[in-house]
Image 1 (cartoon, rainbow, N blue to C red):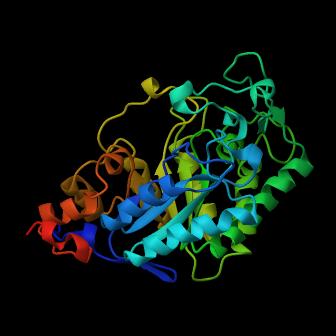
Image 2: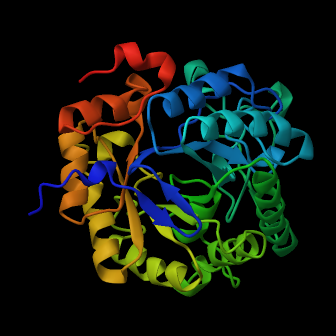
Amino acid sequence: MTTENILFSPLKIKGITLKNRIVMSPMCQYSATDGFADDWHLVHLGSRAVGGTGLIITEAMAVSPEGRISAGDLGIWSDDHIEPLRRINRFIHSQGAMSGVQLAHAGYKASSAVPWNGGRYVSVENGGWVPVSPSATLLSDHQTYSQELSTPDIEKVILDFKKATQRALEAGFDVIEIHAAHGYLLNEFLSPVANHRTDEYGGSFENRVRLLLQVVEAVKEIITSETPLFVRISATDWREDGWTADDSVRLAHLLKDAGVDLIDCSTGGFVAPSAIPIAPNYQVPFAEQIKAETGIKTGAVGLITSAEQANEILQTGKADLIFLAREILRNPYFAQNAAYELGEDVEVPVQYLRGKRS
């Protein structure tokens, strides 16, 4: 096994080169008003760029108002959303980092209260909206059902992703990621747990993956040949009656053929966290399996908290990028500290040279 510090080796994907393999994973902040990014998002995302992260991906950004998890979600359904995002991207780029956007639709998990207010479904009477889904689903208030999408509704979802992609490019994002994980709309179509349709979008594996492939196709019509396209999936539902790792491998083959550059390998969305065997590296085997069996690049995520741990994943070929979530919330300067721990000499902002560890 090589002892090379792969964590700090550059990675070229399409027309961009990441200066290291550290990615800030999308994490909702629930702090926007009407979808608009503000000073919180600038400082939140910008501080990770100052800290040396190679690729910074925004939280799930709703492609339509009804696609928000909560009223505090970022949005990209309007041209008016572009300029605040452009400001953030200018700063990220000024620090030598690349920026990514995660395009999303929450499906039946939409119209929820923010987590610190309980996270339960917010009714129309209380300022919420009616969520949509592949099949009518009982919501978290245990009395309301989501609305099943019609075929014209599905066509609108595809168009919303396409228009959002155009706005994302205008805002200056370098990477587009499609969110098809965690029990949100595209994941709901993939999983037999949530998809009980009997038309061309339900039933067989081929039918359940149809919408995601159509969204990928629509996004590919907008992005250039230089723009990397990622897809985040839940590699398993952690349920016997749900989506499996083998399904993910099968899907990854299709996504690779469709022009997707990397699979961001998360899990879950239809079970309580207590039902998931959470431990360091618990999701890494899915990234490893998909990479080994399809040849597509993968990103590993899930309780990765140290430089040595991240570097070992890369050294042993389990993944190509390391996505950090909770750890990078705790430590915006993870990359700088990891470089010190691994004996790498990396650039830091000139304003912070006095604090550089050597």
